[in-house]
Image 1 (cartoon, rainbow, N blue to C red):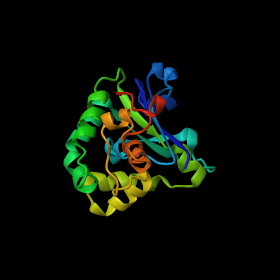
Image 2 (image 1 turned 30 degrees about the vertical axis):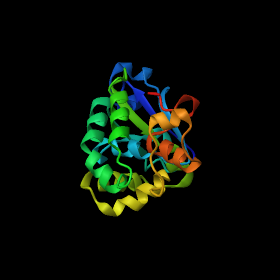
Image 3 (image 1 turned 120 degrees about the vertical axis):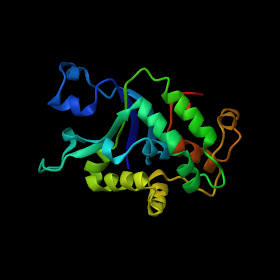
Length: 200
């Protein structure tokens, strides 16, 4: 897998490819908020619903017939969805290390963003590794349906290891963690400047 980005914009991606407004030429994904290498952080996936997927035709396959899709929703909806899904996250992921603390920090930060939309760009992964559009559609559909069968795939996709705790921001700043716990921290949230989330 390559590098993934959580980005923000004031122009919805579907408009950036010629479907609408005149300001679409100003669209860009330059406002990257968080990055992640080799995995997609868990919180990024839980911000979206399958209905948020939009075509990304700049990264279609060679035939041009199967455009990849990326998720996009409003910042407000992303934050609310994470709050609403906290019980589900705790049931699936936070059984030994509840995620209330991390969801609180993450959603409070989302709410301060000066942008209208939030998105994840995983299109390069889909094109380079031949992952079909249906893969992420199925992942998001299972989250929407609270289908327990998706948990193993979510852990594989994020590389989160439930054998290790999710450290607090204070522990991260003070260096109180093992390497495995540090890895868990970033594949839960994503990686900001200086290897700390932007709310640090």
